[in-house]
Length: 243
Image (cartoon, one colour):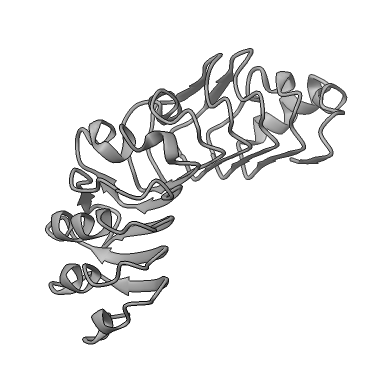
């Protein structure tokens, strides 16, 4: 939806549901200092600097969804430097420009981020390992529709506060290793539509706080291994298991 031309007059507006990025949107956003929740789609790489700078100056911003115009459009987050320490929820749909994890949103602001959902961000390596070193305070993480290395590793200190982890539509992944000590607070683990994941995630039985486990739409060999290794008996502490 295109933003109305008089959007800037709504100075008490707190929630801006999905509007399309446009040439004049940044100027309108500068007048909306009461916004808490913002969703912007159809963002092109040329929009990033002006729109993200305007968002950065919102003192009450707590939730932000940013969606590129398509899955191949690179978004540069260099200008996203939130002044609001309330910004804890970030949803990004789009390619990342190189060096994104070195920008302020994932450096100086990373301690405030609790909820992160990423789609189309082809980080090229092990995204879990890359994100774990920057975002230790996350309680929710979703990775969707992205390419990665074949093996994902959650090391012993990965995501100490994470309660929910969702991995979906990651076609390159064929192995997940969970080292002892990783995800000490995890309650929900949802691994869905990873067609080449043919082994039960190594170390999954060590997740003692786990309450929900979904292993669905995966390689058929995973279920064979699950049954052959008696995994259900090893996961009796998990209230809900779907496989």
